[in-house]
Amino acid sequence: MNTDFIIKALDLELFTPLMSLDQSALAAVDARWVYVDSMPGFPCRVSLVDAQVGERVMLVHFFHHDSTSPYRSSGPIFVREQAKTANLSVNEIPEVLSQRLLSLRGYSAHHDMLEAVIVQGEQVKGVIHQIFANPEIDYVHIHNASPGCYSCVAYRAESY
Image 1 (tube, rainbow, N blue to C red):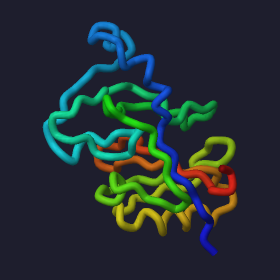
Image 2 (image 1 turned 135 degrees about the vertical axis):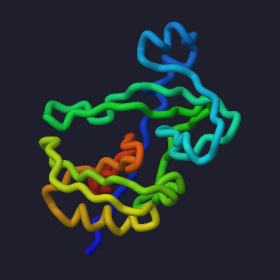
Image 3 (image 1 turned 90 degrees about the vertical axis):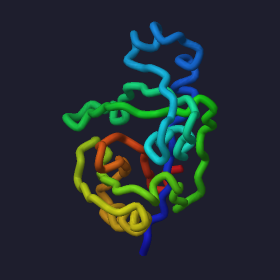
């Protein structure tokens, strides 16, 4: 039996205070605006879509696994200037994931990594179902495997 899941993007509200800062103020918080010069290559963690060439995105350091565990982790992410927070349906896979090599990391409620898998994007839905077959897995972080950067998180649908 498949365990239903829901993928959650980062909430735009986390980044709204940064949107009006100038380059100097952004640099003080390890962020800056950049212009997209290729596609794909600038996946937004709020809208869960690839930014278009010419679009402005914020490159910002973000604690995507801000937990009290040895697995606490952070790294760079992109946020589109005109992003709106993605609101996905149960078991929906955004296109930004389906075209990439991904690293899936299953964590327990205590934030310990219990499982890690590299998967082609077109297989991600089935692999998330497999990971959630383990009742000890509470959530799954999804990363772009090649650069290693955080993309989004999947939770058991019954938790939402």
